[in-house]
Amino acid sequence: MNGYGRRESIPLAMNLLSSLTRCFSESDCNPPPPRMMHRLTSPQPGISGGESGAYSLRVAVTGAFLTGCPLQVRFGAYRDLQKKLEAEFREFGEIGWTVEPEAWRIGGTYDSGGGFAQMLPSVIARRGGPALLGKLLDLIGGRVGEESQWIAEQTDGWNFEALSVRVDFHDVGVAVLNATFEVRAPDAMPLSDVARLLKGLVLLKPNIRGVSSPITAAFRELATETSSQFAQAIRRGVPEAIQERWLSSLRFSGRGDNDQPGSDDDRGRLLWLHPVHILEVDAETEPLQKALDLAPPFRETIRISDGVFAPGIGWSAIVIKAGSSAEQIPLRLIELQWAYIAHYMEIDRGLLGLLDDDRWNELESLAALESDADRVFGNYMRVMHVRARLDSDLASLGGDEFALWETISEVAKFGPLIEGVDRKMKGLQQVSERRVQQAEAQRLRRTSRILGGLTALTIVTVTVALIGNFLGSRSDEPGHLEWRVVIVAAALAGSVLVYWLAHREKAHKLRGLGSKPAGRA
Image (cartoon, rainbow, N blue to C red; front, side, top):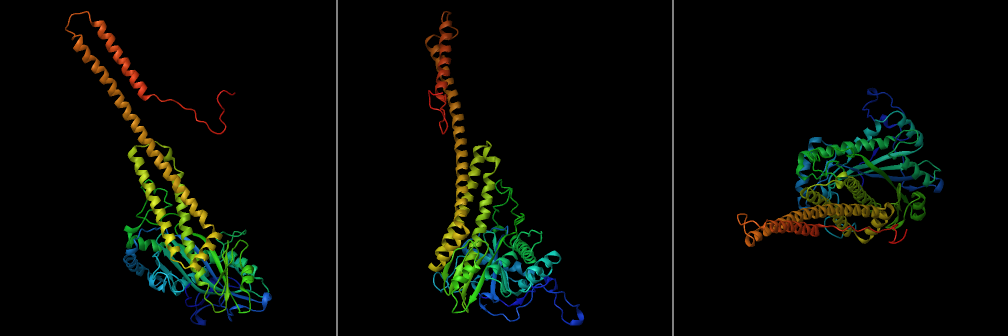
């Protein structure tokens, strides 16, 4: 996002990306089949010819997926952990892995160069550059069959060019993808139709014909492979930093397979793909109207430097003046929000799994219940740590950036997601605390019964001692036997009465909605 790497073209117009194989001499290869994407021969920024002209814009396809490897890293230990990972990444060869955070964000936490000198550490590794871009091209080119035919029909007359691709890995077990293309739409196509078609090219679900986009399929393969390599590096380099996964079905019972990070089905699975359309206009063109034409039906608009930003549901739009780089701030904030949204989605699903557990209805020992309460408290601390980091990340933003963040959050409904996690966490705490209280009450009742029995036994013992003191022992002359029997029986009856009075429970009828008042039929 902060600048684009070497431009490489993707074929996209007639048939499929199956012909991306490079031929070094015409005699060494057969004539290639028609191409589904081809290089933009004469790229022109902005728009030309008004509403009936061809549009040239950039499309940043962003998305998030779970890595299955959440880490517990103290801020001061980031560099040591990254050095260990760097050594592991070398085992994969030159395929674009890097752990140099200084090169990713320079000049302070504000884009204007102010704020703190460094951002809070979160991204621990990145894969990108020409190596990854070439890998993406190969993956797209490997898709054949109905996918090729479908996308050829959809993109006839279009020109696409790949600019960059990268994947940022966050320590919370989330990775964010950004693949940027330059697109030139056919003449006479309205901006709204351009945006809808581009969104259709990156839908994760198959269309009504059951055909998936080869671009989406390539992103899936790239996410799966990249997350697998990341998991291998984590497992070999820093296994001690691996945290329990929220989506592990055995995590609560303490039987989670922490030595196999990322082994669940959701590792590397793309949660969504969200295109951000970036259109450059000339100085005489009002960017607001173009942003409204390019934005989805559900959106908000906000002014940014040199243009307009319209975050929306399905896709977003950024319209800026030609030559400006004002799109970088919204893109960075979108990616940051994707990371937090994906992580909160994982937490929410994990907490739901904990609540939907039969163990909450089972009677266990006080020690087991206290252990459950400790685990719930540990989950609470993890959630609070994420929330504290989010708050600190937002506190480090400039005022204009924070306004953009709030606009994106309003559209994406990030607030209700956070509130849902907080409610589930509160419910878990109440359930665990209630179970501990019930176990303690049961233990107190058991203890009081034992003490009541001992009290009754004490009464009988004292009674027998008094009989022996005042009426004599069994060796005395007869005549006091009846008195002794009566006194012992009275002592026993008194003991039972005392025990019953101490442990009787008076039932109270619970009254609520629908209950009938006393004395009425």
